[in-house]
Length: 295
Ligand code: GUN
Image (tube, rainbow, N blue to C red; front, side, top):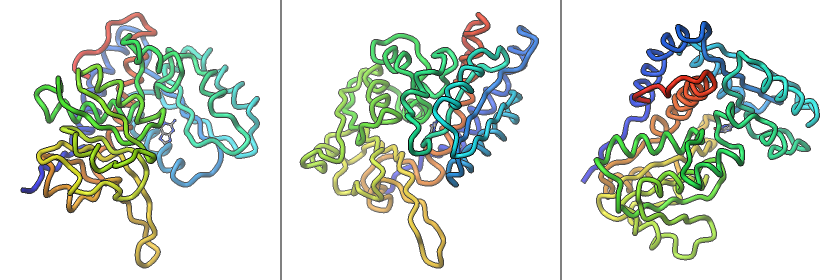
């Protein structure tokens, strides 16, 4: 058996197109375009690439992009002051502070400063808490993108066994909450789980977000499982080239799964598309408009 490849790039392109198509109605109703502010502190190369892509995608969707690049010597107080300024700026609907932050800056304190209604990353405890108790919340982009891919592939998630490997606040925990909301039976496994292979083998759905290259083997999977690989492990390849590897051993997994996301081209492109979706959702809520449909 050879699994269907879930084309996250194509899905993300479609979502970005639907967001862009909904922006003119917002502009007509409010007299302005939605605005996203992205804050980058320091010179982390991967973060610089992400921030550049976010800026480009924001403009392509017809939104305002406010970029703030700060040196890695920026103090926590200075960063908090910038976030407060963005909270008060009426043109800004979404605020994203790119992680990781330099050593010495407490990311929890910075995230706590973001106005929850503008927290398009869904990292603020108010949004995490709303998700946990089943209220409308801004939800972390990567897990929400994973859920969209799963719902596109499966007619119903209800009653399925879902195994989430990884317990981060950014992916694993919100992913588990989202799957629970879809009536899955959810297990959260992680790097200390004993007999991870047996736990993974229960999953009709497996979401891998542990950050260990090719940890999860095809032989562990339940035949026919749908596998979502969030891993983005950069490894030095031959000739100094970096190779991007997922958390799942793709070659063996695609012999057992019914569908699987490739790395790259699976979950990765979804994150920015969902960020644009969250920005439009946040902008609409702030303007007292109904949430845009079909996003
Ligand atoms: N760094 C890596 N992924 C993310 C993300 O989704 N949001 C933020 N703010 N920083 C990140």
